[in-house]
Image (cartoon, rainbow over all chains, first blue to last red):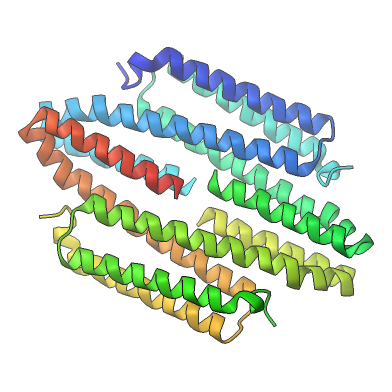
Length: 93
Length: 93
Length: 93
Length: 93
């Protein structure tokens, strides 16, 4: 089971809302809305996605990583390295 | 006409692809895919949105701002301030 | 004259404070302070530098770019492109 | 001992270099250098600090967090929460 198992419904709702926001941006572009308004909506989606990323990361540490470290030190360390690299990709994104 | 007028089709295509990526993340969550894979997809969408934001900004400067500054110095300055504040919101997002 | 000419003293003060914060981080590391405390100081310096970057950018638009666009449309457009590329480097940093 | 213990010298060297870069920016401002050049140096320092932050984080997970989780599950979970919150502050910075 993934780390987000317990919050799966809430996570799916957040993603559906983000999908709706992206569709809203497409509509704005289609209607020739002002650049800055469009840009602000893109920033808003970015912020929402970042929150999703951080909560995914937190659940991952709290469940998958804790379990891996407890059952096997080496496997745990590999999981931590993997998590650190994923955060690197997020920060650089 | 907004600054992205000439690239409207390309912009809509990019946004449609991003919408599809978000839907892909929902599917991954629905299928209980591994946290890190989901997180990496979120980082990828973030990166794609950032590119959209930067190109919106660039077109805005190149068209709306140039025109405003040329037709009226004060109006142009107001447009530049507005653009600087939008970038601030993007950087902080 | 650069766009930050009028705020040069304030800008130098902010940079001197940031330099002091970096020295503070070196001291913390030297004293074996707890990783999370060090990390939080790094985040604080990052935030301070971002503010400096955004205000440099704003002054640049307000002075150098406005003047360039007003005195020469082509030169102005080149300055705006240059500014958009600098923001791209900041956002990706 | 902090997680960065084994890399302390390298870390101090990187921080000293960053301090020098900040001093370099002060000098540039003092000499009225062009806004975009100054801005690019600020972006470069930001990037360097981010690398320091990510390597601090990685060492912290690899040492402090692994040890905490292995010696005590609850203490380990607290350490992971603390690490997740520190990353949140970094990402938002």
